[in-house]
Image (cartoon, rainbow, N blue to C red; front, side, top):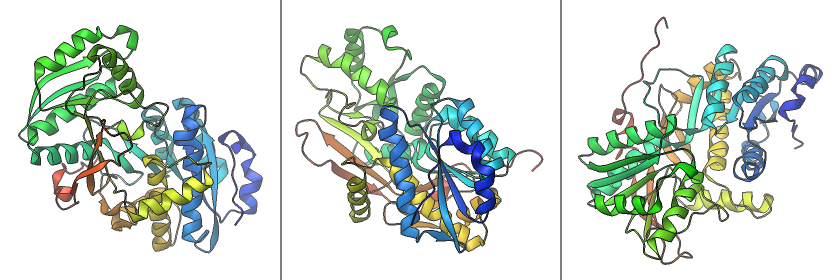
Length: 397
């Protein structure tokens, strides 16, 4: 099948194309396609979307499925502008990916204006109450859900005391506060917490950071920061530690660090949680993806785009319509999720897709060793939807 691949900057040329193929089901992949972001998010997300369409059969509702691509350049205004043009002139039915939280907030407004649907690959920590809605689905990296799985799994292994390090940005502070609440709910204790400046040049000395880590004497140190901040933090500590290693850290950013960005080893064991297992389904997808991506392996964002689009297309077929997007989103929530990569789960009335959690340990002493699976927490083990506060209906709705 021949797919239509267009950039967001060409959307103004869409009216004629839309008139010729108005019945096509169009999926807009909005992501970053510059520099390192192109490898980790951009072109890989487009390829994952293509693979999902192919595996679905290339058609939905008897019509071809087409892909439109856009580069938000990590600028909220650019992302929102692209999406508005897509909905107004491009015949786009759903927007997927958008891993940048700032861009995602702007895109959500554009989606709401046009009664569309946004499927995000990342749900960051948020202290805001969740509203019941069907216009935004989050699939893949749910920071809150993964943290709950990690804390629960580590508590079962005897981890009780935590030392937290994070960044003093708005999202960083929300993440720190949310993780502290999750630890407290699991009967754990935060014995130390430190929020670092967003700019590396403003960090305190590496010596004082190491002193803080040792003084806390916690069972585990949580580095609650993104890949770039994790690398900077690790580089500062690496020299000060002088070849010694902290016993164990928890870093949810670890799986996102590729070989070029991977931080230096500062702990004997790095714990992280994933919403999928490195099983047959994930390996099959990875093998097919790598063969078409010049040897690059897929990351969690790519896996999420693939699985989410498959579920979206199932909902389109079940609803027998691809718009308005909010109705397709409601059908996605109604259908249980089940696929070869993420397994069984559910999309809650808030739009969050939650499911199984797998806890892994990366061993610094053997970098070539396959990461060890420590525990598997099923959706039921996690408490299902009851583990989270129910969403609230917005006033007037």
